[in-house]
Length: 46
Image 1 (cartoon, one colour):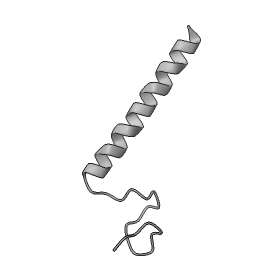
Image 2 (cartoon, rainbow, N blue to C red):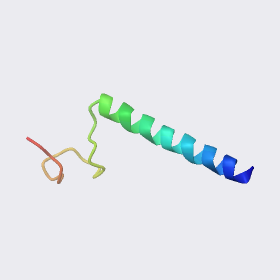
Image 3 (cartoon, rainbow, N blue to C red):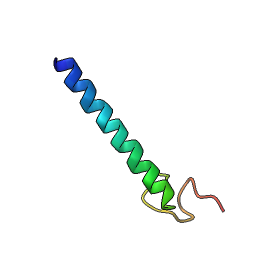
């Protein structure tokens, strides 16, 4: 029973993280996890 509970918690956490990332991408926010969207970001593309 404990294994099922842990699996459910992990699955819900993964779905929440995916949903949050998809929502962030849909709103056009930066996806580089550096905290900025400027030219100093290593993933910045002109």
